[in-house]
Length: 494
Ligand code: NAD
Image 1 (cartoon, rainbow, N blue to C red):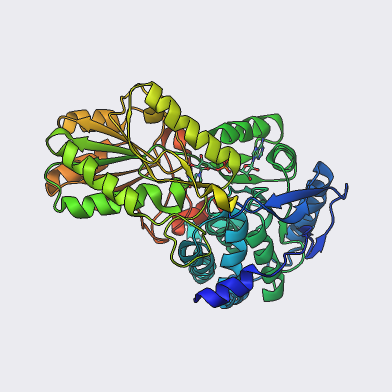
Image 2: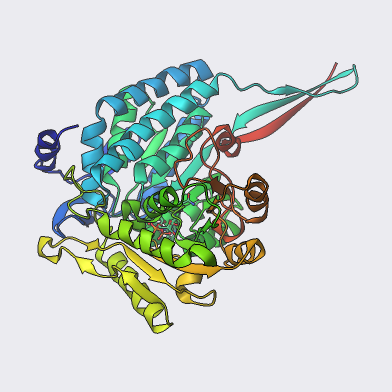
């Protein structure tokens, strides 16, 4: 990856895109288009189809037809593996092009987009391709005159809705296991981050995924997403996004066909630093990256820093120093460490959180401002808010921006109580050299993922999923496959 290749890719015009239905790009039924803006400079970037319920209907019908006639669902696992491996190779060979395309509509810094979006998508397709011909059904321990078989049957048509922060990484976490298991998919990306996923649909066709098996319908959540989740012919919904939308999906399910909904939602993850941490300088450095990378637009971001009283002032000073040292700027400049905030409404919401926190008595140690306004883009300085109280808005609610809330604690019991004092349960971290305490904290802090003496970086081999109001179900690892199968029993009299 070098700057001149990135600059050449960024200079390319992006032609308006339609939906990807039944193996081809096509205009929506209404012909309406949605204007996509770039957060890099606030300028129009291209247009995508503004989907309608009729477009969703067409995509679901094409997915259902493909599923029923078995062109993919009845292909052998080894056959599906071959096609998915080809797709992984195609993504890898076009990784820079895909990463730059994605950065242009979502604003993630290119080093991160290249690895965490494009290359990670290729790795995800490869992982589930390799897994799928190693999964066996079961023979039940019955009496000798019957045979009880438990098959893994694909669920049918999967509806997937994904957010804008890591569209390709999160999209692949759903598309790859769903396809590997033999299902058809209708995917709805976020309206402001659809380009890289439309590219994957194109490459999927090139790799040999049969027509109708993988469909993408673009447009608004309240129209396309709602129609998908209300469809009587979608068998399960897999979703990553906000809790507010997750609640709606459960309502849509109740109002339609009771489809199962797997929800990966938001968090307000506690990152807990004890005075006995093995290396406080390292803890400050990693904790800063754990909140500020991708402008804090990371579901597992360690956005609540709980620091033991004895080291509180020194640690806050150290993390403030790190916050101030990040180079925020053009996400397609290799020298930038943090790119743009995704959109103007997101940026305004972040600034509003800071204002409200100050009004509630928190001290702004650094940041809290829109910067680089001359670019026309949406950039925000990494922000440290100290002295945040348990009852404060900033303690309780997810910002999804580069804003860290810092709160002191006295002892382990208070750390656990504060860690669990929100409605969320996605991720957390603990820094200590006391092994017993580390294990106690992993057990007692109610989250889906706990980091010990590190923060972030848990790879594809382990599940990611929230507890409490951070969701249900899991992406990543072999566990992610479970939701894409129904267990089917055959009870056979011998
Ligand atoms: P969002 O809920 O606003 O949007 C997510 C998706 O849902 C988008 O595609 C959107 O168009 C669609 N949508 C919106 N309204 C809908 C409706 N009424 N019906 C159906 N679909 C609808 O969330 P966002 O702002 O795009 O994403 C940020 C949120 O996602 C944060 O809360 C973040 O923590 C969460 N997130 C969670 C994880 C995880 O793995 N748990 C990962 C990344 C992001």
